[in-house]
Image 1 (cartoon, rainbow, N blue to C red):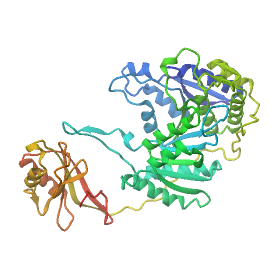
Image 2: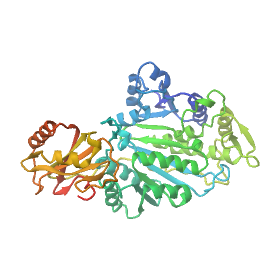
Image 3: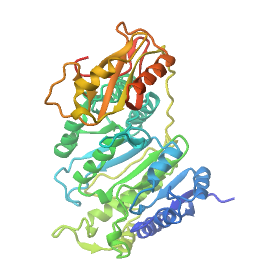
Image 4: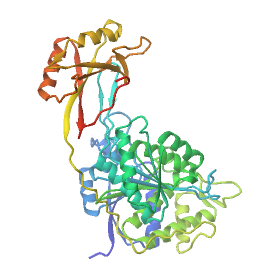
Amino acid sequence: MSSKRKITVAYGDGIGPEIMEATLSILEAAGAPLEYDVIEIGEQVYLKGISSGMDPNAFESLRETKVFLKSPITTPQGGGFKSLNVTTRKSFGLFANVRPCRAFSPFVRTHFPKTDMVIVRENEEDLYAGIEHRQTQEVYQTLKLISEPGSEKIIRYAFEYAKKNGRKKVTCMTKDNIMKLADGLFHKKFDEIAKEYPEIENDHKIIDIGTALIAERPEIFDVIVTLNLYGDIISDVAAQVTGSVGLGGSANVGEEVAMFEAIHGSAPDIAGMGIANPSGLLNGAVMMLVHIGMPEMAEKISNAWMKTLEDGIHTGDIYQEGLSSKRVGTKEFAQAVIDRLGQKPTKMTPVVYDKEDTEPMKITLSPKKKEKKELIGVDVFIDWDEDNRDFNVIGERLRKANVDGLQLQLITNRGVKVFPEGMRETFCTDHWRCRFKTADQKVITHDMVLALLKQIQDLGFDFIKTEHLYTFDGVRGYSLAQGE
């Protein structure tokens, strides 16, 4: 029986095959006890008619090995092609995206030489659920879905990561001043969980000022935990301020399976030229080695890589006149790292990984009490483009709908209240949210909602969707409209 650890490998598209060959050559030269199960992903798979970009047989490989080292891929232009990364993350529950962003100054040019942060991004929810609808001639909708267990998992992971890696602070970033329920849930869970880690500092920043601070003063951050879309954006900002997105590796971690990759794309414009920097994928592979319990091997490779940077052996993307000693291609750079295996950087701090705790982190969710859920109203969305979109006309007509006191309370357009007492200056589209509740906000039934929709239809309106208004243990589970 082989003593080697089997992993799944995909060479990808564009520069993918070149940087994967370089990365594997370094792993093999270092003596990493690995065995490779190579699968095909990316453009050629898409063009075979497989919309996910990954042959179904490849999923069996991941189920077996539980570790995926992946090169960048190219998604063909045009509709109908799913993101392979999103598919893999969701299919295997890879809830945590981890991206270290560290400066390697002066060997990689940066204005922020003290940067050393880790972005921990929720990986499965948010707008990346990809649930979209066209509802009217003018309006399209994307659903942002945030769950309590999803939020708890990623926040606990961030604190556990900080604890395991000697990090001192975790910063949460949301936009809960606007999205008070969805982002508000994430912030609330962060505050609750932070109390369980008194030895780790914590704070919260609104995502816009947080992003600005990453661009201006990245050295003030240590670990950042945030939602999916925000994390996608700020991790690229953070990687770029360290000097180059091309150096960054990332981990996508689930309870069973983990995927490791470079954060950059397939760069088809330089494919086959032998000039691509393999550092991003190599750093992803280093994270993989730590994950599978090979910290000594990860140290050996990471320190050799930093020594290569110190010695001025640089690919064209980070080459600096007066500092770099030699401009090299992909294979030459890999060979330079191989030549330095066993060496450590002298001007940068060598990497040291924990040799005692080599098990992947396990995240346990806290028990959740089920709350009493009661239906007290309904938002009916209507496609209406008549009478110059006079909101008084639609409002007065809808006031005729009444089911046992379930009647119109207000109408908004793009979130702005327009009826009653709307302002004539408000620009309106053909998409109207019409809120129906009883005057005393009593509990209503689904039968009442169905009867209401029948009345709305009989009044000549096209209802396009509904959102039920619930309370949970008496607490409102929906946002108030302006002026409500």
